[in-house]
Image 1: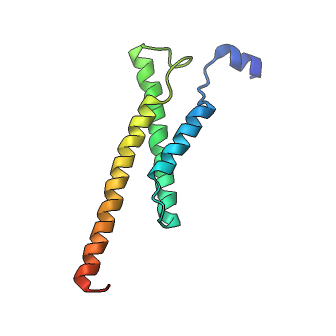
Image 2 (image 1 turned 90 degrees about the vertical axis):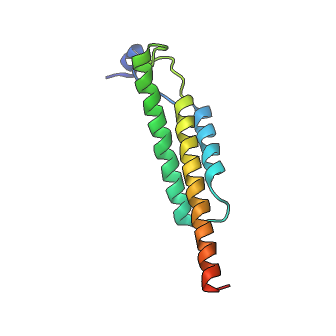
Length: 112
């Protein structure tokens, strides 16, 4: 299939450069400044997964709701941002809870 045919059919989805910038800023917002490289990698992979889930849901809902033609002019940000926000809240709760449990453990063991 040639490029002219692909452009004529317009069935390929694309995310613009602004979307990638926005997603990168969201990932930087989640990462704790002082954390291990393993935690940063896990958080980064989780962000990518949740953003992709939101993007797939945006396309899927767009095809059923008929508010927009999901192939040509569907919005790309709303559901990925909602999915990312849910991930951010879950990751934040998990990180804070694990830090609190570690501090309580250290206080109980008098290891300071």
